[in-house]
Length: 64
Image (cartoon, rainbow, N blue to C red):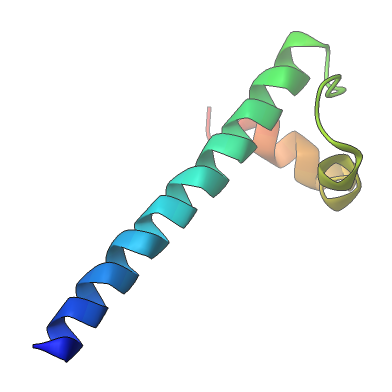
């Protein structure tokens, strides 16, 4: 019973974390798209992390 409860709680927790990360990345992409490729409202750490121009281009262009 404890194992099943722990597994359920961990699964739900990681689902929330995954959704949060997806939301942050999508918000960054939307910000970049609205401001011609440079994110205006993104925090500096996120810009630094995604600072590689190739990575940013891949994220903002997606699989269109």
